Image (cartoon, rainbow, N blue to C red; front, side, top):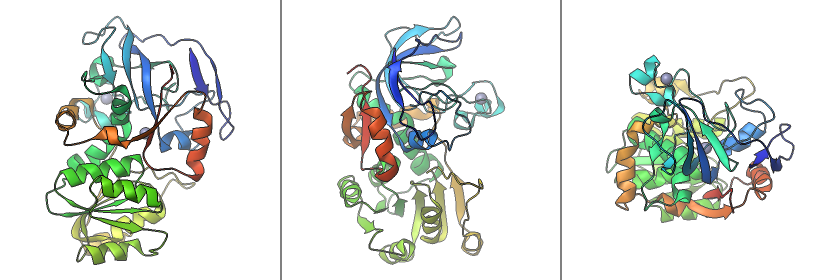
Length: 347
Ligand SMILES: [Zn+2]
Ligand SMILES: [Zn+2]
């Protein structure tokens, strides 16, 4: 099969032939019909992810068709249309037993812990626990965005953030996760303030339901702007970008008893990020992490997608080939861009 192969961190990946994967007994091989290009792929390529060993094939938000099935898999067969959360759970640890597969103790992540979906085929573990059926009416390109960004945003806004109609919600960073969060919060009846440095991203945020937009290039203190616009601060605020500055702005833009959800990854040389904890204490803020979404919690989200309340299809702004992927990956470092780029490995 053809795949995008990273030989050295930060050096341009190759697109070349590699051996086809085989399914584990508990796993499947999926023919990749669409796979999203995500900022975490860029972090992985830069060497920010300790799970990655070289050479490596990235790619973790995918949809496709089951090609081969391991001996002990019972729920899936070749030809099934599927997607998968980027956190693939083991199905048997204490976290999995509690229904919290998104924080599984023995999780695997395609594109991080093993070769991912910037390829024509990908192997996925524990298929009975992790695969999600993709309805016929949902395109592969749209379904690909569910696995990482849209599901991640859904968990951050709905499950962890406990969004409620009428409350002010701030979203810092309007890339794939942020725009998804804007759409999901707005569809939940919240009044959304979107923050980004890109006018195009803010245009999309407005289109997806943001009531207010803050251009961070012209607003040095975005937290103050949010407190002003919302009459005292947001009730729920997400750092969907993942940087010390956006994390702090998210916490500082909350009102009393507000909820901060950290959903953007925060890699740093020391492994820690400063957070305004004095404010968290004084205002009794809740600081929450959000990490993917368990496969078994997809149905309520898929129902809203099927009913047209949520429109992940609108997030897909471009479709590219495997050969165009190295350049697109490199471009994410300087211009994260607005919307979602989807790779079609067979085009
Ligand atoms: Zn991702
Ligand atoms: Zn587990």
